Amino acid sequence: MTQKHTVKAYDDDLKRLGTMVVQMGGMAESQFAAAIEALVKRDSDKASTVVQGDAKVDVLRNQLDEFAIDLLALRQPMALDLRVIVSALRISSELERIGDYAKNVAKRSLVLNQSPVVRPVSAVPRMASLVQAMFKDTLDAYISHDAAKAEAVLLRDEEVDDMYNSLFRELLTYMMEDPRSITACTHLLFIAKNIERIGDHTTNIAELIVYAVRGQIPKDERPKGENADIAVLDK
Image 1 (cartoon, helix red, strand yellow):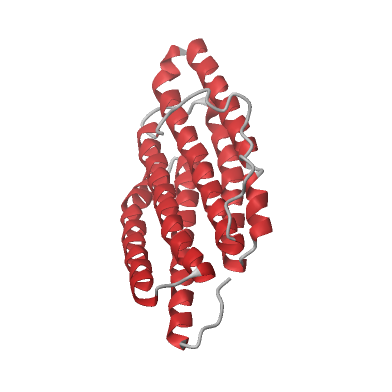
Image 2 (tube, rainbow, N blue to C red; image 1 turned 90 degrees about the vertical axis):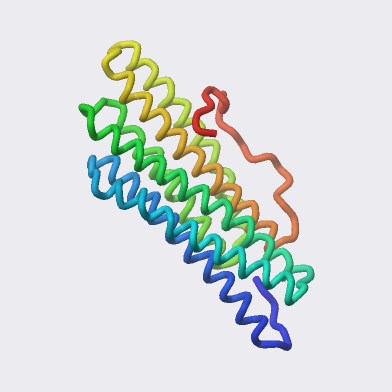
């Protein structure tokens, strides 16, 4: 994505910035995967590890932002280089939010583990698997500077919204049928919303990749599932 410069140190700095984005993305991806595993396996120790690990994502975000700002000040980049650096700054913010939502999933898993298993919990990992696949493809698109692959991720956001809306209705029905499940299902609703928001931040990153490579944000509004605003939780 970057171009060659007469000053080799500048090229090295841009490569280092890209490496920091990928490292932070890998950490956020691992946090998300571990949070879902902790939910499925009712593993409180793993959930606690996810909660504690969020601080590492925050530290790397601060380091990345400071380095990117130094590059802007010292190198005074233009055109492609400017887009790459600005995109890295914005992507770091999106990745931090993904880490925050993964932490939220883990924290609610700890609470869920204190209650009996409720039936709809099996639908949450299916939704998470779709978002995890989107996230992986987005990180791959960043590494390979593949705008087309990033654009393909945008088209999959609608499916996440549809799955969330379906799960929302299922949980509401379950709560009405069995009032004893209201507390657990409420936590599952928030977990599902956290996962849906991770999908949104993933598509934001995909848009930034397209911008960095092509110089423009995709013009077409990303597709949304039917009744995408059926519920607003943890926005």
